[in-house]
Picture 1: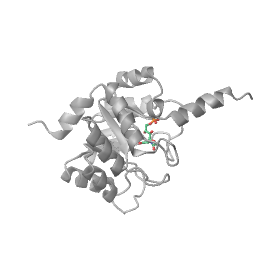
Picture 2 (picture 1 turned 30 degrees about the vertical axis):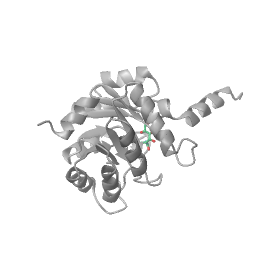
Picture 3 (picture 1 turned 30 degrees about the horizontal axis):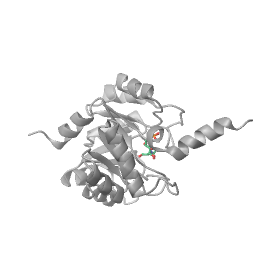
Picture 4 (picture 1 turned 180 degrees about the vertical axis):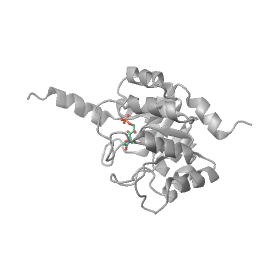
Length: 228
Ligand SMILES: CC(=O)N[C@H](C=O)[C@@H](O)[C@H](O)[C@H](O)COP(=O)(O)O
C-alpha cells in the first residue's frame, strides 16, 4: 500500500502549491473568500493548497479535492507558525493532509520540541512540513521525522538575513543535504522564479502573495507610482 507520505509527495512533485492566506485585518481574511481563492488555485492547476487556521483548513478541505497543507498562525513574533502540539493537532483534526510548523530552534510556547510535534501529527495520521530558515534547521528537522522541509522562514527570523527574492541558494543546499523533499517557499514572485526553484532542486513550490494577496500587490503598484 502507498503510504500517505508517498501519496502527497507524488501529488505535488514538480508542481505548485498555492498559499491562500490573508493577514489579520485584511479584507480578504474571510473564510468564504479564501475558499474561493483555493477553488481558483485548483482551476488554475495547483496540486495543493496551503491554508491558515482550523476553520479555513476545514472549509477548503470540504470544497476542493486538493490536499491541504494546514498551519495555524498565532501572533507574529517568535514561533508563530503552528507553535504548539495543540495547534498542530487542531490543524490535523480539521482535515489537513500535511501540517506545516515552525522548525527553527527557538523555544516553543508550550515547552515542546519539534520532534514532539512530529510524533503527535504522525499519530493523528497527517504529515509534517518543517518550515525552516537555515540549512542546519532543515537537516535537523529531516532527522527528527519531517516529511518535507520548506524554506518558508528564510529571511524572517533572527540569523536569517532578509532578502528581496526567493532563497534559492538554501533550496539547493537543502536538496543536496537531506533525503526528504524540499519545498521552495517565500517571495517567489514570478513563474520564472518557480521554475528556477525546481531547477535548483525543489520538489515542489509554494506561492502565496504573488497569486492570492491583492492588497499587498496593489500596495506594491501604488508605491511604485509615488514620485520621490
Ligand atoms: C514568513 C511567513 O509567515 N510565511 C507564511 C507562511 O505560511 C505566509 O505568510 C507566506 O505568505 C507563505 O509562506 C508564502 O510566501 P509568499 O507569500 O512570499 O509567496
